[in-house]
Every structure is written in C-alpha cells, then in structure tokens.
Length: 177
Image 1 (cartoon, rainbow, N blue to C red):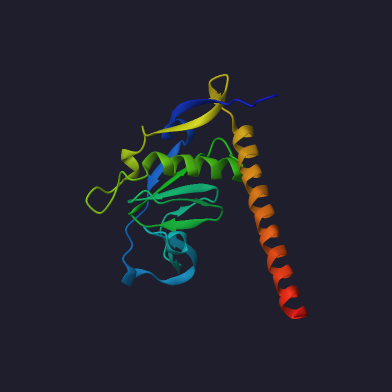
Image 2: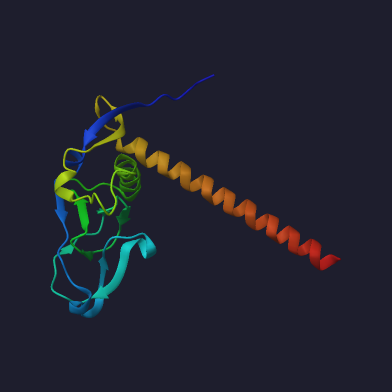
C-alpha cells in the first residue's frame, strides 16, 4: 500500500508576502457610494461593509486580508480596506488562487483565538508570525497546496451532488404517493 507523506515547514508571513500593509481609516460618514468593495473587520459578507468611490488606497486582487480579530479572507478582486484590516500579497510572485486559499487557511489557523476586542491584531505585528506549509527541498510546495485545495473542492461538489440526488429522490417519492 502506497502512502503519501508530506513534509511541512514553518515560514514567516513576510517570507511569503513582500507586501503587508494596514488599511486606511475611513469613517462611515466619509464613505462615498461607488464600485470599490470596502473591507473592514467582521465575517458578515466576508468583511465587505460598503462599496465606495473614495480615493483611498486600493489593494490588488489576489490578496489576503486579516482583520483585527484574525478573520481571514482571500480576495480575488481589487478593494479598499479600513484601518482594522491588514492586507497581504506578493507583487514579485503571482500565487494561484488555490495556493492563496491554502495560504489563507494556514494564516487563519496561525492567528485563531489569539485576538479579540482587548487584543487587536495589526499587520505590523504579524510579519514574523509562522505558518506551516507543505515543502519540497525546504521550500513551500505550491503545487501540493493547489492539489489539496482542488481535492477539497471535488469532495464538496460530490457532497452537493449526493445531497441534491437525495432531495430529488425524496421529492419523487412524495409526489408518487
């Protein structure tokens, strides 16, 4: 029987992301309606609180945000961020969406349970935080990260199909009675 064993290594946030920047303060009363998603702390709507047109710093798609409580999200769109949100990306190396999803999960695990209203996370504190990643030759193995996320997505799709099949079967059974 063949088993797949993965080697994992520990990496600091700043060894993966060359850009780690805190968002800018923008009070609700100062927000002008527009098309730019504006992210603040929270999990509702993945932290998007408004769509603005203010000339605030715009952060690039393919970024990860971590708010002051450790809530972590991958962003596949350009956006603005409030001062309660740190933004992480690498403008020298383009990571795939699946690799970024893996990184976001690892980052959230790294900060989970460590921050709250009394102890808020700021991106400047996180530079040396560690995440555990699969490795090849002591370097992050992004292909393994991508394969892992793809496998999870396939399992979720399989479960959705099974659920839908059960609902269809139950509906057919109820109709035929």
